[in-house]
Length: 438
Length: 173
Image (cartoon, rainbow over all chains, first blue to last red; front, side, top):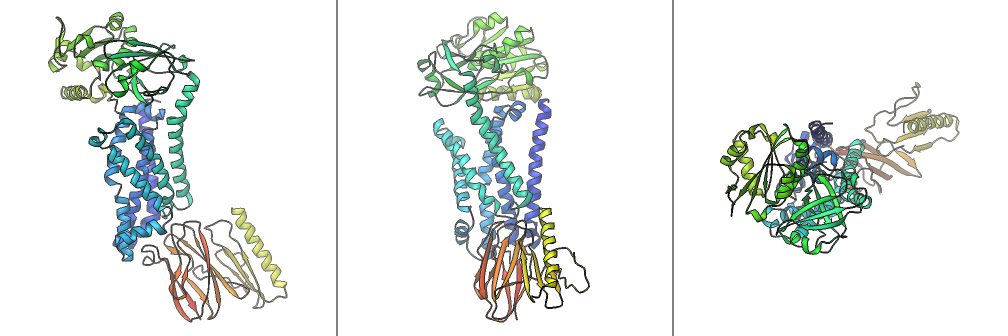
């Protein structure tokens, strides 16, 4: 099945679930609308919000489930960004569900909102658990707002995010109180849907990495400095030829060593050779600064993946322009290895701060790839000075409009270049980039 | 499930036929429903009163001219056991299956409320009847003495269900 067909299928499955849920709501709650009183209408829409909320939460779980059927056509990075967008929408609208119901029921009973809230908490089955679940989701959402998340350590943010599973579990049982889902096919459907999503999540997120570990027993074989800041970590194990990936893909790595356990995404900087994997990691934070000092041959690690669509598979043409910024060379280095071997038409613009920051110069030279070097500082004679811009692209690779363009580098650089290429008339489907947002 | 229903029906017919010959003038049988949420098959046999047969909530299977078949599901079927009148009322999507219950003043009434769908209860304020709010599949039985004649409303106290017509009448004669 092509990626396009898979995308259609998945969006179809989503649409079908929305329609089925909507139909069960209509069957259960339309008498409230027919009744027409403000209280009944509020309750009907409060219920609809609840159903939409749960569907959105399930979508959230599927987006980060690492299910290959979804990851392959969309790419983990895109799914992750969708997860963030849906998360903000959820955060902004989650209180509508309890708000509409408290309002509707208090209006109907002639009580105040606080009394009605306590009635829900006290007399309605499992609602108090759902209230706790909703509070947890709110907390998770607030901690994920960019300006708050920036101040949190990854571990704290990630740990609180895992509470979402508990929250969804707490909110589950109260959903069966309304006619929408309380019995018959609606009841069975909702159970099946929720348990399928949780099953997928548990399998691909937690069981599969463990299976991979047991099968391959990944361990560090060599730690090689590539530059002052960049370290290559070679990984070996059993039956490595069975660990299939495409050049340009990345993995989530958790080293089984104190200080390096937090899972982090790293591109594989070599094409598959059936023997080993290589990560090339730049010192750019707490975790990565410890890589060179703490890692040694023999350290074991868990791997998740491979992930990503920053690969040849996403290309429309067979002509390529790669633009790398600093350590963004890693997935490109891996793709070039494969493309150079079959003498494909490739152009590479490789930007670094200064020549001493450039890695893989010899490897690229050995592949016979022509490299347009760009330096923002200390440019040697013959190299380009400054940043990658429109003038340089037009001059260095005049036929860029006929190529698939792959960009990997710091987020600011990617944003700028993507906007530039779009303005120059490069269609979206020929622009490839992943932001490593995790 | 279907087999179970037909089995129950066959059993009901057999009992009816048997009761026709019985000397006992007042035999009452209640056949338990096969599944929750399915109307109970309640058979009242009053052999003394011209062999009257009453089947509630089931298709007419015994269409003999002298059979008194009551297919009006809106009126509660009473079952008399040891001087207590028993009824079952089923609640689903904002309505009760039984709209009217008739008892005699002084009767002890045993009222079972079974909730098939949604979240509902059954209350009769005048007799202090309250089954408590039940989830789908829940069931509760309350007992009270109808010591006052008149027409009383039973209703669901959840949300605006009462206003939406989730009500019925208890008539005490």
